[in-house]
Amino acid sequence: MANLNNALQALRAERNRAQLHVEKLDQAISVIESLNSLGTSGNATQPKRIISAASRRKMALAQKARWARVGKEIKPVVVTAKTSSSAAKRTMSASARRKIAAAQKARWAKVRAEKKKAA
Image (cartoon, rainbow, N blue to C red; front, side):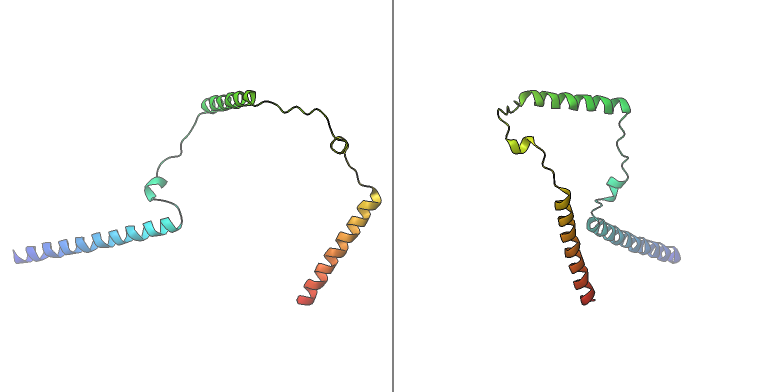
């Protein structure tokens, strides 16, 4: 009988150590998950919500209807006179573009030269 009692006590002690070990592992897992912003592990097992194509179509139509309602409420701004600067598109001559391109190439050459000196 003494051997059975000793064995029972040893098994209970081992179970308690195992429970403590499992609790420590759970705490470590929760700390790592909170650092990794994964949340709790229970949320990871939930399946992703699946929406049928018909339901997505209905949702899209409803959203379009809501935006159409909002669009009707907004009054359009009436512009009476246009300025000459907004009516005409400004173009740049070929010579002006060449000058700008040459200046930009010179700037980049200077940057590369300074970088080469530093290295």
